[in-house]
View 1 (cartoon, rainbow, N blue to C red):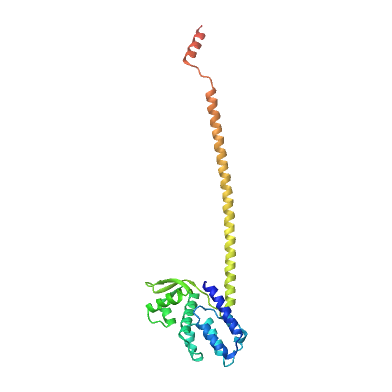
View 2 (cartoon, rainbow, N blue to C red):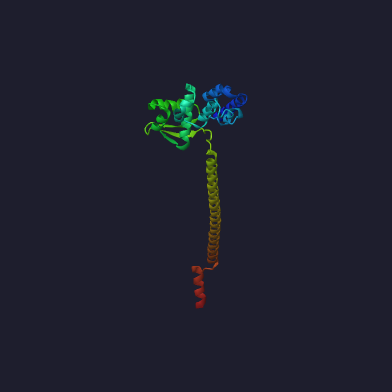
Length: 247
């Protein structure tokens, strides 16, 4: 089962559980969801009515926690940690994994120095172990570790939940891509038509050349035939003709 299928099953599981809980009872569920090693998407849980209802109450911390894991990073947590429950090791790992995904959204070459700063990692060995064991083996990213250039070249990264307001920007990006694709398709079609036209001209030119060659061959054959059919006098014939003239 790939990561997308695992996500879908887990999301369905937690959404159903969240729908049956209220208030403080959501606390253990939120902790379990944000600690699960295979769950990296939380927007569906955030839309559950019973979860949204804790906004502005003493239990709103659970909603804030889900929003952090849906859109935030490890640096975000450090800024607001005083307003949230202390994270357990599994949640810290998860948030750092999500931080890598966020960085990979905007840059496919991630410098080691930037990664170590964002993840609170003190040395390159620890960073590379984290990227290999906790990110690539988990299936959320694929890439190449470049020790010489001290960077991580991202080839694939799983997508995170869309942040508020990000949908409009994504729609615009897709619209621009579609327009560019349409223009490219039109250009390709025009080039195909031009190639077809040139192909027809080439065929016509070849036919004209072949016809001309055939005409030349026929002309040469007729000349040769005419030359062969003309009578020629042998030496004996010439002698007899001369005698007849003398007589």
